[in-house]
Image 1 (tube, rainbow, N blue to C red):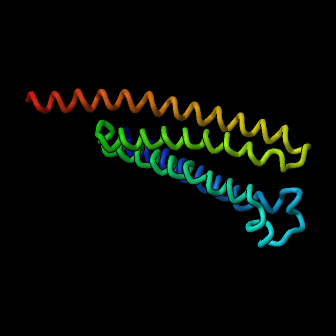
Image 2: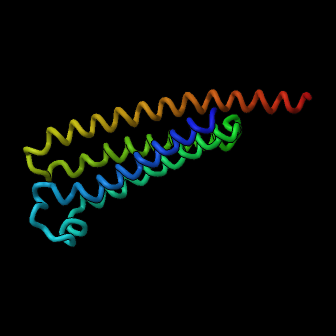
Image 3: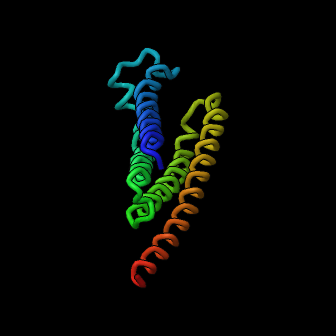
Length: 158
């Protein structure tokens, strides 16, 4: 790939990460029940918020791995075992996000009944997006793994 396009893709990945991190840090201040709460009450007395922060770890790990894959593409090392490992990690991160979203249903009975429909909608959207990412990563992983095996076989015969 061209150097400019890979740098652009890496910049987009960094901006996505910064945007999501900013959203995770700022959104609790605007939430209805936290409108007049202190910073301590917002961040340390809400078990769901702690769960969301822990559940966001696979997202950021997946973003980092995507950043690395684009870097491999820039260095013409996309057909390497390290790129296959990075795609496998992205796939597992997406699967972990799906599992953590399903696990977040435990908090549903404790929420306000008016907040449940948007919460379910958000869970469905995040699960669908993670499923698409996991499927794409698995497909690319399989393709790259086959290409790496063919490349290593050709290197042995030459």
